[in-house]
Length: 558
Image (tube, rainbow, N blue to C red):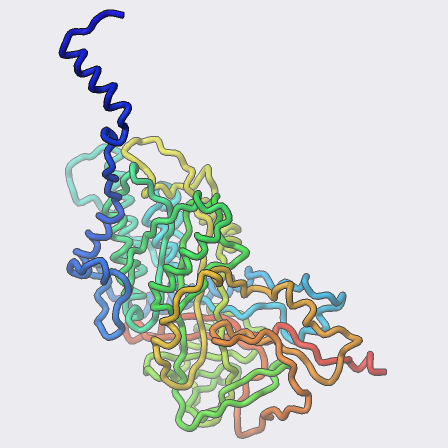
């Protein structure tokens, strides 16, 4: 071995010595993640640089400070009317895709004999929040995927996309021009969605979130994160884009918990458990969109409110009995109720066979010509909190289903780098939506039952079917008697009861000519004012009792 010069030999000896002491050579300082920089930047732009401890939940008494620096234009009456028709059509089409309750766990062969209502599930959707969820996804899309998302959103508002003009006279290369055109396309989507939503942000608890794994070595565009938080962050002052590594969660349980926890914090714990158990993400997931809202209706009554029991589709359910002022349609199939706030209304459609279509929305919007009546109404305790997976609905739609294809999806604006050729391997796993709907007759404490610690044991909450563990509790024919069991869907109850044994001799409130009773399945539409015009807030159906047994029928008694 050749002898090295003295200086080089000294360096080599030092290197060998340090190599044995790796701790003295390797730096212990960890690289500072980019996410903290983005959150700090957003805090400075939106809330004036509050400390990290305040970067959580907004106090209800503070004014809304979101949407700062967002370009907001007031929509016209024609635009609001067209949006109402298309959004209700979307709700009706989506409800038809929701699968019915799973009855495979029932031991009886003729299990439908124990059912008096339809196979549908109690459902509630906020179509505007769903569209805002697709708008947030468009902020991370590019190429044909961005074009399809833009067309999909504009079609549901029946608005033509504005012409994108290049005000700069300097000629640019094709890549730069395409990048600026996509940025302008995203701005049009954000401005379209925010103008219909900005009036409702302070009154309704809700959130739009996108969960994905953002690599530290692939720095995303700062403007994407900033615009996403400005237009979709909401009054919770939390980032709309959340970091979540699905690959390190084999069973998906932590991902489910993490999503539910973020939604609970962002909605002041008004909406929880937004992920359906059957559609929970796993290690194969790469991106998830979540939209949630609390659509509680505060019913304005003119007299004392009484809690009564009524027969509902042959079953039993508690209900409110109160005097109020309401409007009735000419055919007496739709009743319009006034909310505690003067700009909130609830339409109850008695015939459940009537689909939620644009014609029904047009009829409701013409309620100014209806007859106003003062009387007594009996309305069930409507509590709907069913999480919904929109995967099947959009997977079948050819105008938007490329977001699920690994060969066509282009959702890599947060995962790309400066090179031109990028792999199209980022796909959307699912879009989860949950809108809570309930009718209350007095002002509720908004902080009620929201200070409880988030329980990880209930990260999975299945509400789309009855658990198989209830099979032994289902009454069999040989054990049938005068009593019947009923299932009441109230997922917001502190002490939820799955099935009750009700005495057949129990006296129920009977309908007479002095009151109007809703004792059959019905659809509902809740509206609020948007620039002095009614705008749909949520819509859905209420069937209440999916399982009921009346004992032996007439044929078996003989």
